[in-house]
Each structure stands twice: as C-alpha cells, then as structure tokens.
Length: 216
Image 1 (tube, rainbow, N blue to C red):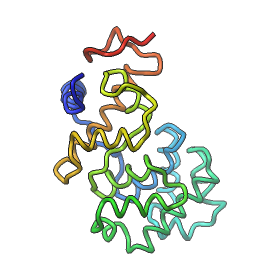
Image 2 (spheres, one colour; image 1 turned 30 degrees about the horizontal axis):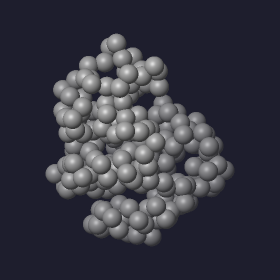
Image 3 (cartoon, one colour; image 1 turned 120 degrees about the vertical axis):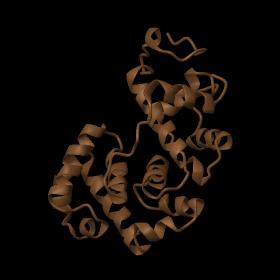
C-alpha cells in the first residue's frame, strides 16, 4: 500500500460509507466513548439503553445521579466503578466549560490538552470525543489502526506510539475542517476491515488488499 489515502479509497470502495458514530446527540457520543473502553460495542449499547430509560443522557443528569445507581446502570459495559467516575468527571468538565456548543467554539489543540487532563480520558477517548462529538479534525488511533498500517506496510512496526501513528495520518491528510468526514470514515473503515478480515489471526486468503506482509 503506497499511502494512507490510497488505503482509504480502497476500503471505501469495498465497504462504502460507515456513517459513524451511532448516537443521537453529541453527549451520547461522549458517553459511548468512555463506556467503550475495554469492552465491545454491544455491551456499550446495553448500558446506554439503561441510561436512556432513566433520562440520564445529559451531563447535568449524570452529575445529579447517585453513584450507586449510575454504576448499576452502566454495569453491562464493565469496569463500572471506574467508568461511573469517568462519566462524572467528563460531565463536570462539559458543564464547567459551558456545554457542548461552547466547547465546539474552542480550538482543537487547546480542547485536546484540556480533555486529556480529565481523569479517565485517554488519547483514544479524547480524539473520539473531538472528532465525533465536537466536530474537530482529530484522527482516532486504535489497536486496529496500528495492526493494519503495519500489515499493509504503511509502518515498519506495530508498536509505534499513539501520537506517532496519529501524526502520520494528519501529515498526509491535513487536520482541516473539510477532512472531518474523511477522518470519521477512515477510522470506521479500518475497524470494519479489521473485524471482518484483518483479525489477530487474519483471513488473508479472502482479503482484497495488495502487497501486505505475510502473517504466519
């Protein structure tokens, strides 16, 4: 594979637009980004449905919810004690900064620095919030990205740091407003391809990507 842009075009042609993130509001995206840490999306959906049933999908509602009740509602997503704390931390950050719409007015790098200071918000979670909830061009890197980039020879090792891989993408596809949609689709397409074919034990015989490393 010659470039990240080429990989994007090939995956888009194969799978079509993915239209991520599956959420009705920006805050629901934020909640999902926290809950999806160390679990699969099916479990996150169960937890979000519980929160919806109790009308708890606003930062103010999360903050006013008793800790024990919040933990019980998000239990399907696992690590529920930590995640309940993280949801309250993030909700407090949003409320103290004037809400989602006010946050959208701020610059990407400043927002990213502030989000990363919130306990429970790591790089992948912060970038997911920036890209999908706050409409900022900040590419999301995950384990799928590192694996696929290595296997298609975009990188020479799978163990590059998060920031290094993020920088590779953003140097080739600049972090400007018109590329927000590209970032969203590229991230989603990498996940889709990795789940279908480029697994830990890859299904190389069924893969349409060319010039990949031989994985044995």
